[in-house]
Amino acid sequence: MFRVLVVEDSPVARELITHLLTRDPQITVTAVAGDGVEAVRLTQELQPDVILMDVHMPRMNGLEATREIMRTTPTPIVVMSATSVGTEAAMVFEATQAGALTFVQKPGAAASDQDGAHRLVEMVKAMAEVKVIGRRHQRSGPPREVVAPATRPSQAVRVIAIGASTGGPPALMAILKALPRNFALPVVMVQHITPGFTEGLATWLASASSFDVQVARDGEVLQGGRAYLPPDGVQVVVAAGNRIQLVPRLPEQTFCPSIDRLFKSVAEVFGPAALGIILTGMGRDGAEGLRRMRESGGLTIAQDEASSAVFGMPKEAARLKAAIYVLPLTKIPGLIVENVARGV
Image (cartoon, rainbow, N blue to C red; front, side, top):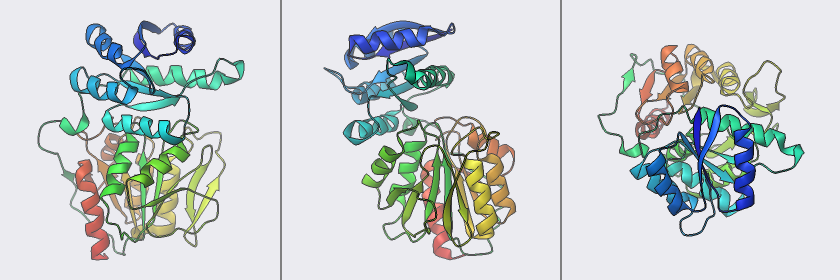
């Protein structure tokens, strides 16, 4: 049984969310809170398995409450938002920096929003299984660097491909923000994300980095110093001529967009002139694609366990020996710059 704390200032929304959750026999709503102050207190008292956290609330908003909970009683947090763009969306992504695992759009009461209701329930059940130990940057112990004897790419790096899932937005931000302002290569990213939040993520990433972060358009040519995210509901690949292609999802493909699909296309088009990075996330998407990139002569990196919110995808990449380097997040930008500067 998954025990959930629902934090929402609207009584109507609280009732709806509680109803949607408790229709699943594996979920019980152990308590509800109307503001962040009450959420902090109830988390300490009840220690729920997962918290559904609204953004805008009186006394203490969801961002502030997330910071306090992760400081005092680390608990898996799923942030809820009524909108996926603008100031509220920025608060959602900032909450992931504070330690929230992921986010969803608030489901509506209409029967037509059954997809949103299902997504909420499945997200709660998945995140309740994640073990969190507080603010990720506060983890102790020396960083673990796992390196197979590094074979340098035989060609100059021409493109960076990055895949991320749970905990990914702050990891992507950390990398883009740390790269130099005059960084000359294009970056193509896949982030598993709730539909509707891609535009907001692009805006948030661009706001604190030197990159022009865009939602990709079919057929456009990759430009240096620009980062690309795929739009909802399609696969993103790179094609001959350094062009982006947006292709339909195939029935057998679990993820859309798929990290594996992107990485395999990068391996095919760029071969040893590519650098691939797999970041924090649940599951295995991206590991096989990263292995394909390494086999094609590219430089490959996986985020290490200590700095990952969820060491699922990077762990699988390490198991497959797809990653030449398994590194703390803070070390990844430096390795990128080192290899780009060498022109190897």
